[in-house]
Length: 315
Ligand code: FAD
Image (cartoon, helix red, strand yellow):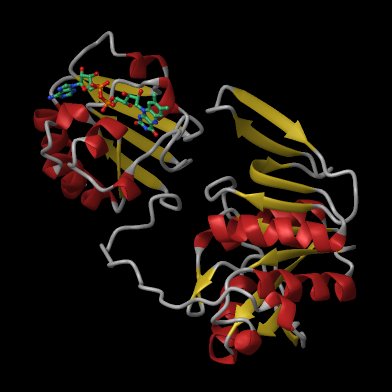
C-alpha cells in the first residue's frame, strides 16, 4: 500500500490534535507516515505520540538548516522527502504557514493542491466549504502527488496502533531557499484555554453580552472550551481580533459551538456553520441564529449561562 505523508503539527515536540485527525484521514488513502520537522530531542516524543494513530513510519527531518527561516526551506525539505518516498498523497494541517508551504511544494512537485479541506474520502475527493460557507465543493487533484491541507476538527481522530518506526531523512537546503529570515518570534501569551481553531468546544459571545464576557468565559472554562466572539464584539473593543469567528475572522468546526448574544449574520455563520452541534442563547426568539441551531434557548445570556455553568460544574 502506498504511503501517505502527514506533516506533524507540533510546538517544541508537543504534537497537536490536527496531526491525529490527518493520520486518520490518511489511513483512508494508504499507509500513513508522519513527518517530523524539528530537533532530535522532540522526535522521540512525537513518534511515541503518533504511534497510537496508525503512523507506520515517522520521518525525522532535522531542522538545523530550516529553523530561523520562513517557509521556503520546509517546502524544499518536503519536496526532497516526496521525491524519495513517492507518496500517494501529502497532507498538511491548514494554517497560514502550512498553506504557503503546500503551495511551494505543489510547484516543486508539479502537483495539484487543495487547501482548507473539511473532509477527504477513500478516492481522494476532498470537500471544501467556500464563498463564506454558501457552497460545498468536492474536488480531486488530477495531476502529480495530491497535496491537501485540512482544517482542524475535520475528522474525529481514531486510535490505531502503528509501528512509528523512526526514519531519519537527510535534506540539503539550498541558499536560494534561505531568503527570508525570522528576526523575532514571540510566543502567544498562554491563556490556559485551547486554541480557537482546534478546540473541540467553542463558546462565543456577541453584542448581546453588552461587553461583559464573564458569563461566556465562565461557561468556556467549565467546559474546557475556547472563547470566540462576533465581529460586533471585536469592533466594540471587548475582545481582540484573534477571537473573531467568521468571514473576516477564524473558521472553526468544533464538536460543539455555543453562540451567546449573537444574531447569526451570514458573515458569522461562515466561520462556524460546519460545527457538529450548534447551540444558541438569544433573548430574541426571531434571531436568525435559531435557523441554524440544534438546540436553542430563548433567554438572557447573563442568567442562562451562569445556571448552565453551575450545572456543568456539578455534573
Ligand atoms: P448583533 O447582530 O447586534 O446581534 C446581537 C444579538 O444579541 C441579537 O440577536 C440580540 O437579540 C441578542 N441579545 C442582546 N442582548 C442579549 C442578552 N442579554 N442575552 C441574549 N441575547 C441577547 N461578523 C462576524 O461575527 N464575524 C465576521 O468575521 C464578520 N465579517 C464581516 C465581513 C463583512 C465584509 C461584513 C460586511 C460584515 C462582517 N461581520 C462579521 C458582521 C456581521 O454582518 C454582523 O454585523 C455581526 O456578526 C453581528 O454581531 P452580533 O451577532 O454579535 O451582533
